[in-house]
Image 1 (cartoon, helix red, strand yellow):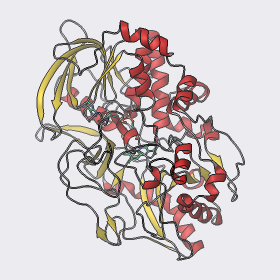
Image 2: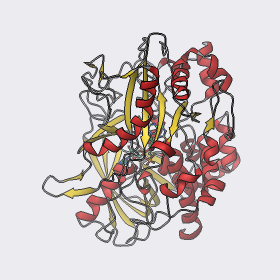
Image 3: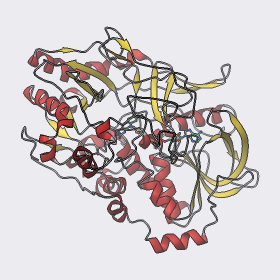
Image 4: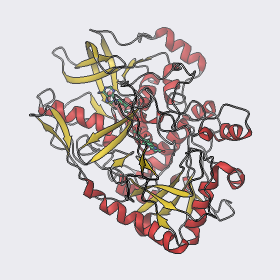
Length: 552
Ligand code: FAE
């Protein structure tokens, strides 16, 4: 894997180097990952003490996982395979029941009650179009996308069983090997690229778009225009792997299956096609019969229990977000997998309020936004980007080494011709923020400032100023407000807050408490140079293997 996962293409789309371990089916992926055989799963199911329903008040359990995103799902599967009963606690919904329209998830163009976490108005990442605001009122509900407003930045996160995998674009990128030392300096790169990245890619079901199909299909015209402009300015365009089932997308285009990516579904869930964690790690974890998931349950406290292990307080929520009950359980081990923001907020509060006072001074530090910044360019009329755009990006512009930016060529699936090219850049932004406890306000705060995005803007400009000058084009100023070029108010990629080797040991064991672990994006110090979930997954695979071998 390594830098081979980014395939460099010529203008004819043919591969010049590299290859990706491609699996076209989830079943194939899970076989590669070495999970249970059906017979083993059935045996486990019988032997299991983990019930099917939500966790019960007063229960004593061997392992409790807070959150069901990438880190949590890896931990649950591998612990269950090692014979441990696992309880996963998830504040969001199960997302397994269709709404009145027969669909589980709302379309991006028609957000409704399902779309946002406890908001009465949508908070779309692109707030405007042609200068007009596009947000609209929605009923307050425990919806799928949380636009969490921290000081100076809106952090977008998935809520529900599957975490970020429910809402994200599925871009599954292994960082270039030469960048790994800067991403996780205390981790053995040899092991990661030899064992854990391949394991993660296989289990996630990562695959690459068929380059020949890419050349011909209308729904990737936007990406071909993006490639042409990149290459004319001398930047390499690379195909980016994804967990979307590319064969399914071909069938969508052929009109033989219900459309998801080609109907613009993304951000508020995909009703088909995307291999979210529900279809991969969580399906395999459930198949062991040893994993129970409690949706609409939110962990609020973890502290040492008098008889050993940890007392965990869990609030039960209804779909209005109201607390309908509180449960107290005890667990021998607790895995924090609530995402970078969720885990950091919990740990900072628990340390400050005396529940876990021995956590060290590194808790809450080292948070970054993966250098995310967005922008659009206005193309000439002869460079139409297409009325129908697949919602799944498949390529990016690599100027990391020279300019500190890797820009995804992203779709704008509006259903009309926009003549716009749209990009999400990941940049080498060096700024890091800290979570702290504000006792007076009774909440955790983040000291990120919007001005800290300036390095990201400067790095993205190394690509787009050059393209604009070459093409004789300009930036769009109507997507993030009126007369605003840069989407510098948000991130999709929160990372850090309980950094590996600082707040924890080199495998995620929290300093100060035996049996408490961090196993999600909070471990990664602020930047992965590419989209982060493959690295989060691979690191979790590495850490849980060590924990199972030495701590259980
Ligand atoms: P995460 O997946 O966020 O899971 C944490 C889970 O914990 C969530 O389900 C929470 O609801 C739950 N939780 C939080 N607090 C509690 C609590 N107190 N009690 C119980 N449950 C709790 O964490 N990354 C890529 O690599 N490629 C992409 O294409 C990509 N696109 C993205 C697009 C969007 C719109 C967004 C929002 C993100 C995108 N990401 C992408 C980022 C990626 O989804 C993210 O890095 C991972 O999901 C983070 O994984 P974690 O395991 O850290």
